[in-house]
Length: 304
Image: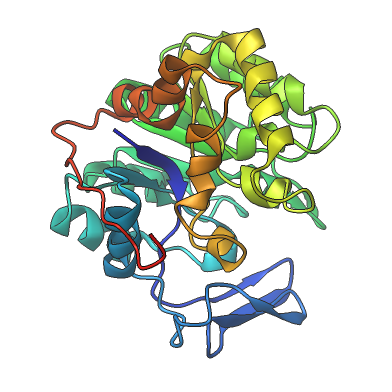
């Protein structure tokens, strides 16, 4: 059973980050931080990154379910993701997101939880603002974390490079020991100090997910031997049962296919079959509470 612990959906990008616009264009491109980038594959000509297109990719790749996280660069997608979760409850676990870059987000978080969201995402690397850093340990943040802990909601969070925000995370874990936390981007694995983020998973309710690991090792490219090495290194520190695979779909499939974002793991001779099963699905299934995941048949492609 394969479960993707880090993916994205949006209907349209139309937002501003760090004072720079991000806008959907045509042929899968977006205006992104002052330049035109291939945001999604060019066959997604309208730039709509829909659940239905993702499900088609998931079905072909035999991925049973996915966690839909969020990022400020895509704009806040709460309304669309609520629809997705209602329409496909067995395939998607969705994270809500608040406007954390300015005070007053606690009522937004309360509303998300009241409306059925079971996780909240913080793109914490985006909180290092020019006008001042938003601390993860601020009074309003801590109120939200206590509320999430009480409600049994999961915190999905991407951190800035290295150990910059690790001390704040340690304080959060001490204050809210029962808060379930998933740290993304495999600790920004190609950056100095990444293992300090991995070590946070020594705490009982903290997990690490690998969303983006293929773009982080893009210079090396498929089959990403250094990514396998990093997975083994992290497992030596916190155990394979604390690690989850994530694709960072759809941005990663501008360079590789969706299936390639995980089959470098299945094809590896450096990991045992049990380690692969834990990393690719079993851990995420238990952590996010997926029940009755679909079993998908293998479909031969036209090159086989």
